[in-house]
Amino acid sequence: MDHDREPAHRKADPRLFHGLIEAEGRSYSNWGLHRTTRPAVYAEPSTYADVQALVRDTSRFPTPVHPVGSLLSVSSTFVNDGGTLVCLRKLDEVIGLERDPLGRDVVRVQGGCRLKKLNMWLQARGLEVPFQAEIGEASVGSVAAGDTKDSSLDGPGYFSAHVVGLTYVDETGALRTLTDHADGAAFHEFKCSFGLAGIIVECLVEVRPATLCRSSISIGAYATPEELARALLAKRSECDALLAVAFPHRLVSLFDQRTEAGAGAATPAASQPECETFRLAKRLAIQHGFDGVDVPQPEGIVCSRADLVNEYWRPTTDERRLDFQYYEHDITEVERVVSESYAFTKSFQERTGFAPSGFATYFVTRLPREKKPFGLYSDGPGVSFSFDPLTSNPAHPAWQDFSREYNELAIRRLGGRASPIQTQWLKSGDVTIPRRLARERFTTPYYAQFLD
Ligand SMILES: Cc1cc2nc3c(=O)[nH]c(=O)nc-3n(C[C@H](O)[C@H](O)[C@H](O)COP(=O)(O)OP(=O)(O)OC[C@H]3O[C@@H](n4cnc5c(N)ncnc54)[C@H](O)[C@@H]3O)c2cc1C
Image 1 (cartoon, rainbow, N blue to C red):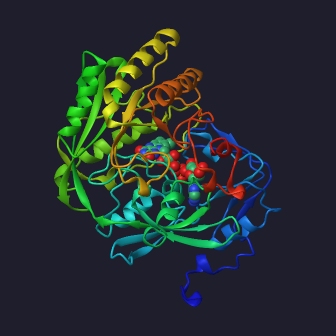
Image 2: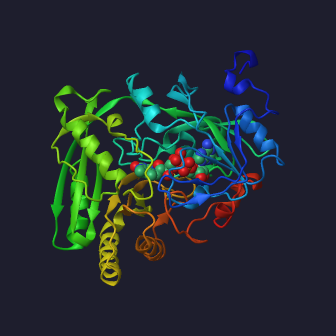
Image 3: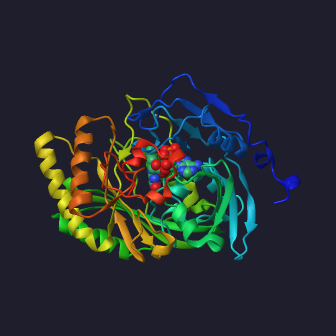
């Protein structure tokens, strides 16, 4: 790019840091308030040059340097005691639409931009990214190099699949760009690197004309876990994408069956106020970890999925608030996973009196292995599902014991894959990240335990 035409966020002097620096020993917590870190320095860069400057200055910004966005993650992914925590929240511009060299329509967006802001920007222009998960606060940088899940319509179901180019600051402080068409394997590997290979400041995300979704919500009760498992598969086969919240210990499940409903960027007036009532109830249910909230069961409402992406208020420690664990399994394992999870949950409940509020079940379509070489969804073409226990109090000791023990079942016995940003209490060996993806400048002790 011609330097005179570069936008201001790219032009500043990469030797100087102009952003906010906090180095007085404060601690930072995640959304659920059950994980905290005390970095030596917390920095909020305002420009790409700020990110470059801080990566270069090892005395003022101690190693490791670790990027975060909205600090929503449930695991210790952001923990960086004594290091430099870099929050990208000020780099949150949606820069504009472009056509890339392969003729694809793409949006250029900064790494700290929240998904809800990006969705609304695209919706106003009649466009969308097929990934429209429940979470509107997650930042583009985090979901481009990290793990996500959504029961997407006509799309894979994880955000990074739509990222076709990215700009990042490497361990020397250089600003680098990778694209799928020019860099192939290096690009796809970078998207599996959780910030260990560099700090993402900008992404190119493929977009398509906005579509509408017809959603039907229902509840089913079953006599056995096997019947519940079969119902999940049957409900999925009746629609284009299924999200379920199963309550295996009660042998009940809530289903959101989604079907493509043609072109359109706005929820039709005919679906209001049902769609808005549903959105608000769903937001409250997720905010409160599905504890004590009734979700309405509209039949066949047509909506823009972008409207159903929600933002959640920052809870206090005495409030009910969502916490969860994530596990990926192949769809052929549905019956085994549901039955064994039922047996485990029942026996845990008999021993301790505790059972999770439910298990979120997403279905994600996998791409060829070259496009997702490591971590979740890296088994090549096929369909994965998740069976994710959730609760309303992340600090509850019984929930934490449940999660640790369930890790043994889901990862070790059932062969599920876990995520370093969406699965808690992981041990070395539960997740493997290739060592060659990790630069020393960016490797925290939390991530060091997973390198192989
Ligand atoms: C209420 C709630 C609902 C949720 N619902 C969903 C859902 O429906 N679907 C779903 O997939 N997830 C969901 N999540 C999980 C959430 O989307 C992910 O944890 C997401 O990564 C959070 O984004 P963040 O910006 O807060 O990341 P942070 O927690 O700030 O960072 C997480 C990690 O991302 C990496 N990272 C962050 N920024 C960068 C960068 N610029 N460059 C490189 N690496 C970076 C780092 O490894 C960092 O530790 C939910 C979470 C909550 C609390």
